[in-house]
Image 1 (cartoon, rainbow, N blue to C red):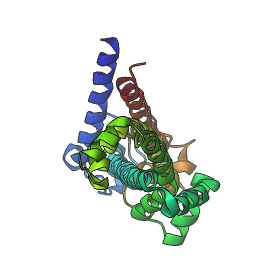
Image 2: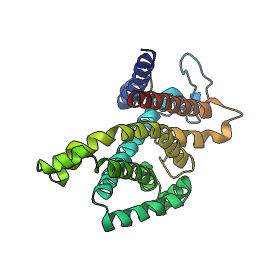
Image 3: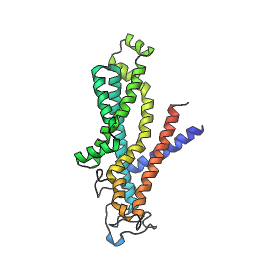
Image 4: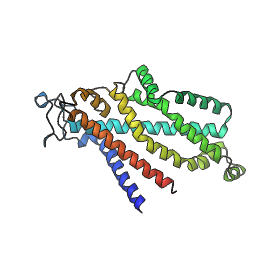
Length: 266
């Protein structure tokens, strides 16, 4: 019962974050892109709870709008790499042979490079931007899921119920959809959930280095990068998006732990 309450509580916070990201435009107390130089660098107050930046833009509004870019792009990235990687892994594990050899060697190549360094190189080649940052991170992150799905598929396809399904007349596609995928989806979901925090940090990292979201787009990593020289004089400009990243990553990591507990009762 205690674990159930923890799961429901963490899930509630995750849902709240996603809802805020989806409806950020309607939640922001001010226009996050409206400039008013007369109130530039205003300290946190009742009028502006997180203060204002160099252009007089409300930091709270920009943090909320930045969540739309940061959270939704992270969820899109995790969805892409988990679905693609799982599909590739299941196909390789079920059919094996040459296609399995080629794809696994390709995944070895991707895993041979330090992840963020490889992503930096790819993002730089593609020219930056949030879409290119997602593509760069997707190229280095899918092997994790393909290897997991492949290993699970190899162990499941020799099971007696798979043999029974073959005798019943199921073809390869039916076996994969009806019997293999439902039995490996649990570990995939757990891995994807635990991966959200990591991917969010990496997207923010690329934006911080100028290879993700471009100003004036509100994105947490980009906002921290733009205000990093002001940490000693106007710390709220950097701390506001930094706290948002920290809090969101912690919540998603806690949710991932609870999801793991739900799927693995041991």
